Length: 190
Image 1 (cartoon, rainbow, N blue to C red):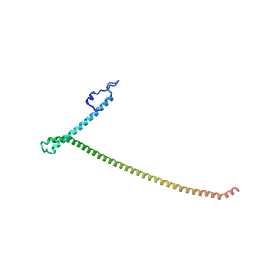
Image 2: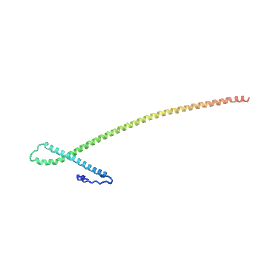
Image 3: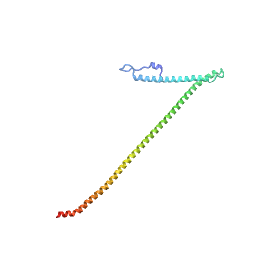
Image 4: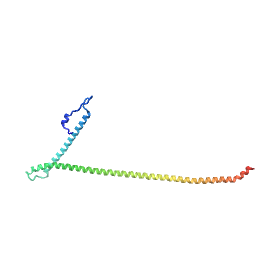
């Protein structure tokens, strides 16, 4: 909706029942429209001022470029310069927009490259940390395994020694029984 000053003057708000004043939502919506139209007008005004300044600088630059060869040709050249000035201003605006675009693209590429470099650096650091933790954990587990294997070896040695001692003790007891058996029987028989 194109907003005109007459729209602002003639705008009628509905009264709300049981309250004094206007419907706040309706007033807010209308003010939003006013603000949008006002911003459009300000933007258009700024654009026109820029075009006028470019046009005026184009007119001032044209005579400075060189003297007119013939005085009678000057009036004919002036409308041509006047017609070309908006095109020159438009070309200048396009050139400026292209330059800004190129700068933004270059800035974006530089930022992209920086982010990629930071991400690669961070990934390399995370990978190095993970590899270091893996080496430390592997070394710790190897130490634990060596300790456990040593304990198992000690237990096997203890078992062999214990079995040998137990066998020799039992065999000694059996020998004592075999040797002491008849003399003990004869002593009790008498």
